[in-house]
Image (tube, rainbow, N blue to C red; front, side):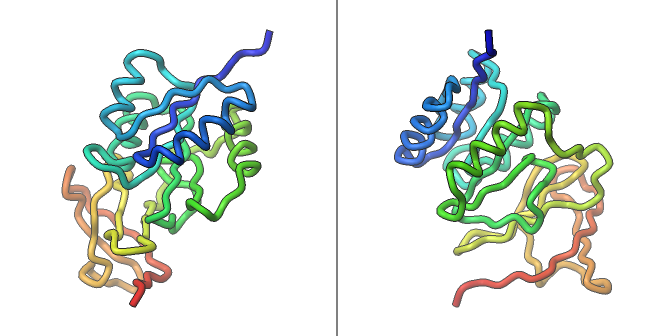
Amino acid sequence: MKKQFRILLVDDEINIRVLLTAIFQSKGYVVDCAEDGFAALRSIRTAVPDLIVSDLRMPNMNGFELLAVVRNKFPEMPTIAISGEFVAERIEGVLADAFFQKAHYSPTDLLATIEDLLAGRRPVFAAQREIPVWAPTGDAPVMLTCNECLRSFPIDPCGAHKNDQNNEVQCIFCGVLLRFRLLAVTRPA
């Protein structure tokens, strides 16, 4: 008998939850939904999922905070970040095993990634030295994820100390000095 995998879908937009739930269920997944990070953590207490798909910008507890908690508590749990407000400077990051930009991916690609992650085909981040930078597509701030404490916080890319195209900033949570490289940050006019 084939195991029925459980996916926790976290998004504050009900239309996204309804659509992705229908897609996931059509492929035989059990789907739990949450409208923000706090609701997701309550859901995890009831039933630990096999994989989490989370939006990044949500009220109350956002996806950055949720995925940092999940990564600390369940380091082996596969996670996928989906956002219409952020673009990952790198596709894979400390917080998520995969990233999809809303309205720029196909359900087929998302399902294939879920299948790969659930089959154990996922990146290994233990030796990761690069720090994920989450660039906004709108008026959201540029976010940096600390590879020490796994928390994300906004940064001013123009205000960071520039050193040969490398930037340095101190994590506002744990105080570790982070070095990162921005390829390009453009803001809409």
